Image: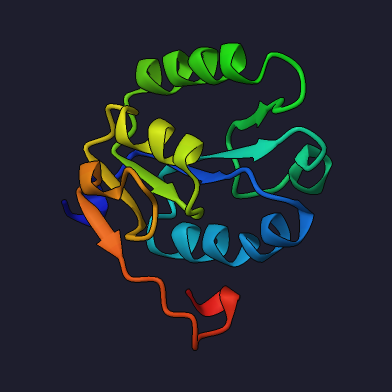
Amino acid sequence: MSAVSLQKILVIQTAFIGDAILASGVLEKLHQHHPNARIDFLVRKGNESLYAGHPFINTLLVWNKKEGKYKHLWQLLKTIRNTKYDMVINLQRFAASGFLTAFSGGKQTVGFSKNPLSFLFTQRIPHQYQRHEIER
């Protein structure tokens, strides 16, 4: 898929605050390579203030993992599927974020090969422990 055809991109990072902060570099690179794309970002409740008003984020989605975790997961999946993303990028290795990625309906789904649902992604990235987290 060429850069021109990437109109809608979703980045998923629902881990704790440190991981959410490290994800800012991904947003910058995506904006650099796809300046006209709509970039949405999914974070866990509690991290949304980090990205409120971020210039590269169109829509900030929030997952409340403490109250109605699985009910909210299904609601998020419905929202994600209705948006019809060209690309969904999962920055985590957990099953729940893998579920959202795999069943997002995204034309391209990208995530770490260590994710238990990565076999359903269109592109799997090997997890390289020797590299710093921000470079992965």
